[in-house]
Amino acid sequence: MSAKVYLVGSGPGDPALLTLKAKDLLGKADAIIYDALVSGAIRNLCKRTAEMIFVGKRAGAHSHKQEEINRIIIETARRIGGIIVRLKGGDPFVFGRGGEEMIALKEAGIAYEIVPGVTSGIAAPAYFGIPVTHRAVSRSVHLITASTKDGTLPDLDWDMLSHTDGTLVFYMGMHAIPEITAMLTQHGFNPQIPAAVISQGTTANQKILTDRLCCFTRDYIDYAAYSPGLFVVGEVVSFAKDYGWMEDKPLKGQKIVVTRSLDQSSSLSEKLEQAGAEVEVLPTIYILPVADQNELDNEIRRINEYDWLIFTSVNAVDIFFDRLFAQNLDVRSLSGCHIAVVGPATTERLKNFGLQPDFMPEKHTGLDLANELSMAYPEMKGRSVLIPASAIAHTDLKKGLEKQGVHCKQLAVYENRPIAYEYEELRTLLEENCHWLTFCSSSAVRNFMSLIESYRLTPLLKNVRMGVIGSITAKTLKDYGFDFDAMPDKPTIDNLVNELIRITTNK
Image 1 (cartoon, one colour):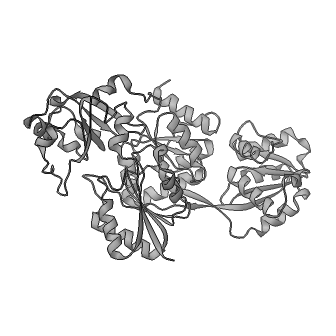
Image 2 (image 1 turned 60 degrees about the horizontal axis):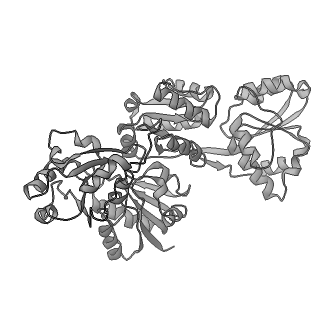
Image 3 (image 1 turned 90 degrees about the vertical axis):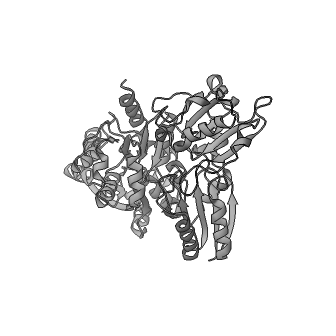
């Protein structure tokens, strides 16, 4: 299959600013080659089977040279074919070296297309109420790179910049801000004009520092702490004082890693982002139906021979009904069967199919489900139960029911497959102000810890707090030598988010 490479801008950080075309391509691409500045929330939009290739590139800390990235893009296109997305922060043609990649593709004879993205130089100031142009205040905007290949300040026309009637936006220049200030003022720029350092604009961790241009000297602040960031100079910066519109939220400043599978991470990620957190989606597992579905199909055809159908996960619900509908059956086939679920999340998923469970335990574990169900329904003895579950699911529920004289069949309907990551990607994630790791299943804990141990990154977890959804996940975490810092009373996504907020804000 012939390949086509799309050079796609992912925007300035807020996933909501991703273009419709970019989102569509992420859902179709056979391979994604992405940068460090592309958020986990955006990567979560990628097709589950896409090959993910990390080329973590950031000013001052490049893990890949540009020539090497060009080679990776070309080799991936030739090896895989189909749709290849080169996903870049911001806009690929605004200091993103997209032009260099385009030239390399043209010379290699590989088809390509450019998908522009929202650039941070416009969007990040806007999130603080700063219009980079404004009638009678700023008649132009200049987007300027403050870094060269060797890391020094470019040889710019400082005299022209110092006498422009507009706004200056410097990219990739945190280390050079004192030198920029000196060069501008030396060439006649008004030292009293407003200026701002904007860090991680449009994200939950965005921050701004405004002052007069002359204040941004070498010893003024630790500029590295604001990277990645922009330096904005111009009268329009004064708008930030009265027109900033992003509200403070309880998890602002918290970087939280979500390890749920791609299919399930969106609900937790969205709620954390709504609370102000910077979310990194790091799915350690993906859910795959077992290759041979014949046994499940057979059990569905004889479902009326069962008295109870018990679901212990949303994945089991989804796969069971996929197979039910594949056989031209519908929920009426379950009319003679009672349904029990382990907890609220499974209940909500069941509702999507127009069904309410007949039973849900007070405590949401398999063993508690077995005990409470037998107490609520004394006639369970001698009854038949079907439990569609993961291939690695605990057997506590089955054994608990069998002790009560119930005939149980626990059937593996899906597998939890691990997802591999590169060393540099995990190291960067954990080293750069990671505040929380969240786990919603034992398999997520096991696969994450396996990755961390294989790369000998365990010491990086020392200062990271851990949140778990329930006691079973907490026990698995304990098996690896870690205690949880947050666990809700009831294992639901909403309760986990609320517990993270409570602990973070000390309320």
